[in-house]
Structure formats: structure tokens, C-alpha cells
Image (cartoon, rainbow, N blue to C red; front, side, top):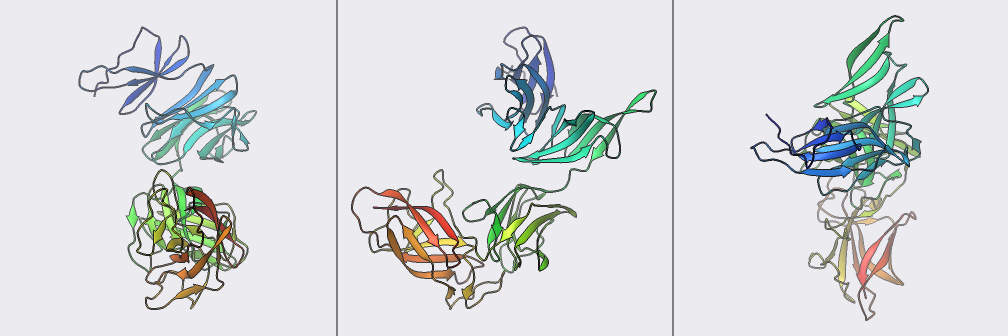
Length: 418
């Protein structure tokens, strides 16, 4: 395959990366990074400047149709990602910081498909480290002092593998060695309620949750309960004072896993994801009796899913009607009577009320809840049926709504009322 590119003027260029759509080159005259479209059928591409005004580019990685660039400017070290021609610069490291972590320099960058970013940096004078960056999570995987010892020089990614180049001295001569780095472990970047996508600080038994990150190698879906504890080569363990328990899985993909929190006890817990026998564990989370979340509609407004008594989904901006009945759907609302074991259908033909009736407050009004509990025929799916008691006139507005559970846990969202 021959790549053909066209430049708008003569420049002294150095090719720094290429993928199936673009070539990335540095203009050594004015230190400008250019992204150039590449065409395979004899038609020339067009030049597009994606980054300028910097002092120095220190590293660049091109993978997954994405360019990630480490450079310095007047603010210090920057690491930015460029996803496509219309995407603005997305900062991963800003002025030498990511979250609460300081990054002094970037010597080499690499990325693997559907995975995090890896870079070599100076940890302290004379010691370099291999770092994994996933969102705001920074982890040190290796240092020069770890076996095999040697000064880290560069990295090269090939498919799912990462290769590290080290410089080694025997006191007289320098040699270079290349060895694969075991980066195949799954990685969790976020844990959220599966209904509301609220970030989790706690877990509650019987709640549908979502893991985000570098997770499964394929996309799989389980269609019926009891849901399996292994899906697409992925297993999820939830650790508490009652031991390690495997979580039922409903959906797995390279970047998302939906799981059901098993019966856990105590005050603290951790989540471990195992992919094809290789594991990684989350930071510690608390344990509560409920972690309420109401399902959202997947549209640009991310609005709450509300249905009328005929199960019709309310349109964007449509207000509740005075005296009418509506339904909310959620997860993590807590125990019911009668009790339904986790990962089992709530049998049809019965009602499964929450142990304590919740309250639904909308603005200055309190809605009349007529049913709050598990939805018969589903697994850990809750429904809240209520009557709208807000009968004001005027322009519909998105008012703050609060679902307050008996254990004090509160979920806040928006409802359109007059």
C-alpha cells in the first residue's frame, strides 16, 4: 500500500505516526504538528493543522484512528487527544497534572485498542516509570528498578500487546533489550448506577450497576434469569465481610459491563473484574441498604423515563397532568415484602412492596405514591406508581424531584410540572 499526501508548501517534515486515515508529521521549521489525510486511489489529500503554538513535542501515539500528543507550552506539560477532524483538543494532562497527580514529562507514548493510554515518565531523578492513564486514574506499572532492570527508552504497541525498550549497561557497554509488558488485565475507570449513571461511592445488594473501562474482549448479552456469572470470558467478584461473591452479569462489551450486586455484608467492599483469567480490582466502596437510581431516556436531554398509566413515554417537555397517574422505573430501592432472592424473577401475580413507603417530593408538592416495589416478572427492577398532586397553572417547568427512601437514601432528578 502506497500513501500519497499533499502539502500546502515546502516544509521540513518528520513523519511521527500514521493510521488508515491520516499521517501525522512534525514541521521542524516552526514545530507545528500537521494531520494530513491519506488517499489510496491516486487522489491527493489535504493538510490540516491540529496543534500549533507549542514549544516542543515530546511524544506522539497514533492508534484506533486517534492521535495522542505530549507537548510543552508556556503552561508546562500537556497531553492531548484528537479523535477526528472535527474534534477539538481533548486534554488528558493539563499543565503537568492529571487529577491530583503531577506528571513531570512524557518520554514515550503508546495505546492499545479499546484500552488506556501508557507512557514513560520520570518518577524521580534517575528513575523512570511506565504509567497507565485511564480517565483520571494514574497507575505506575513498572519502574527502572523492577525486573528486568534498565532505563526505559521507548514503547511500541502492536495489536493488544505493548513492548518496552530498555537501555542496559554492564559498566563498559550499553545494550538495548525489548520485552513484552503484561498489560492485558482489565481496567475499571468508573462504576455507576445502571439506571441513573450516578457515580457509585456505595454498593447495595440487588442493584443493577455498570462498570466502565477496558473490560471484555467481545460483546455478549444474557437474556433470561438466573443471569450467568461468566459472560464473554468475564467474571465480576464483589468482596465484603461475607467473602468473595460472584455477581450475575447481564451485558458485557469491551468498554461496559452491567452486573447485579450480590448479597454483601459489612461496611466496605471492592469489585474485581476477571477477564480470561487475568484480574484487576477497584478501590474501596461503602455498603448501604439501597442505592436508588431512576432510568433515563437515551436522548440528548438525558431526561428521566416517565410513563403515563397507559405505559406511554412522555415526550420531551411534556408536563405531568393534574390528577393523572404515572410510572417511574429504577433499581437499587432496597428490600421488599415478600422477600425476593437476588437474581430471581419477582413472580407474577403478587405485589412486592418496599419495607417502608418512600416519599416523592416535586417542588413544593408531595406526590401520592400508590405503589413502590419490585416489578412482577422482572429481576431487581423497581417501579414507582404515583398520582400527580401538583395542579398549578402556568408555563411547564423542570422542577427538582426527590425520591426519599425509608433508610434516608435520596435520589434527585427532574420532572416537568406546571
